[in-house]
Image 1 (cartoon, each protein chain N blue to C red):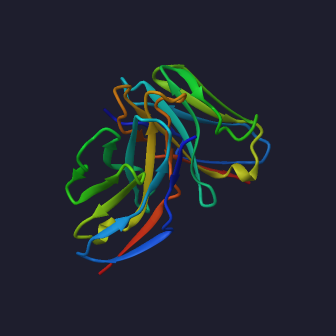
Image 2: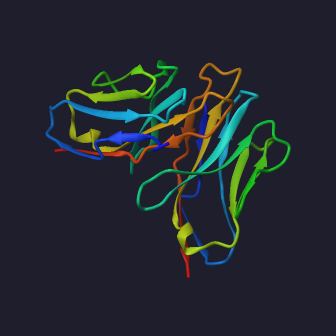
Image 3: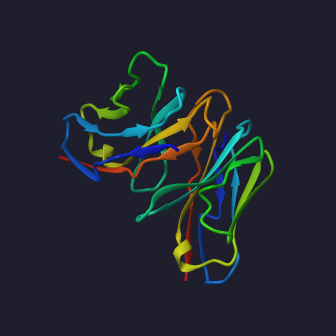
Amino acid sequence: DAGVIQSPRHEVTEMGQEVTLRCKPISGHDYLFWYRQTMMRGLELLIYFNNNVPIDDSGMPEDRFSAKMPNASFSTLKIQPSEPRDSAVYFCASSLDRGLTEAFFGQGTRLTVV
Amino acid sequence: AQKITQTQPGMFVQEKEAVTLDCTYDTSDPSYGLFWYKQPSSGEMIFLIYQGSYDQQNATEGRYSLNFQKARKSANLVISASQLGDSAMYFCAMREGFGGTSYGKLTFGQGTILTVHP
């Protein structure tokens, strides 16, 4: 398997623009997590899904952020409108639903909002 | 709510020496999993080791071992015979198990930067 695939790897956008980050989890994995990493706040869980259903979105910072998982092999994290403080590395991770197994991470998307 | 605490922002160790990275957690759930991840300067997140709350013995994976003290709610990572390539950020994480409202939720501590000196 190719692992968790995120796209794009880097994104530079202007403030106010819509940004869409994409994630393809490992085939057969039932859980999908979205994290944001910054120097100030560390690695924050934004939202996670189980079998395509959002379970906990309490980490989503505000209404400008939304996430979807239309099927088992694809998820998006959208920011609209983007702001400079959204600049961060966004990670997607997936895991099996078989006990408390480890999550496998994608390479991350480095987002810069100017 | 889950909480993971790593109190050491940075640690230094001499090559070939052992080092312990601290992690404490807080949960009221009887079932949970504890993890350590490594993030080198290249940015990827690498899974190192796992400990289940019901496991009787401490987990080990090569040079990594997890010193699990359930009563004290601590899950320290021990790296033996440190190598230069061990220099990285290390994260402790906890996953919620059965009995919690957010089964499967995986949250991370703030991380510890480990620097290995030659």
